[in-house]
Image 1 (tube, rainbow, N blue to C red):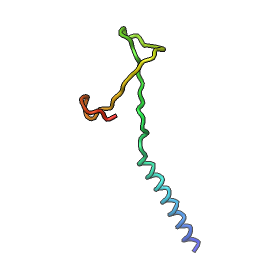
Image 2 (image 1 turned 90 degrees about the vertical axis):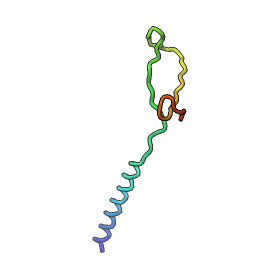
Image 3 (image 1 turned 180 degrees about the vertical axis):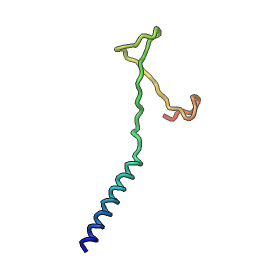
Image 4 (image 1 turned 90 degrees about the horizontal axis):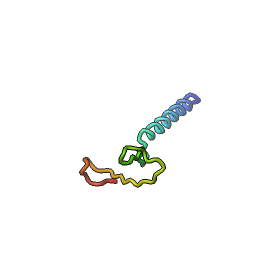
Length: 69
């Protein structure tokens, strides 16, 4: 009887480990866009300590595609 409980415990631990591993495999990517750039003026000099505004669009399929985000 003691041997059956030990086997059941081992099977339970293996099942739980597989469940945890499989759930992490299907994790989603964070909803963010990492972006880094250097703003330059007309003479190609970096624009340090200057406020700028940018607009990003995610397009579907091609440069002429519809805006998705």
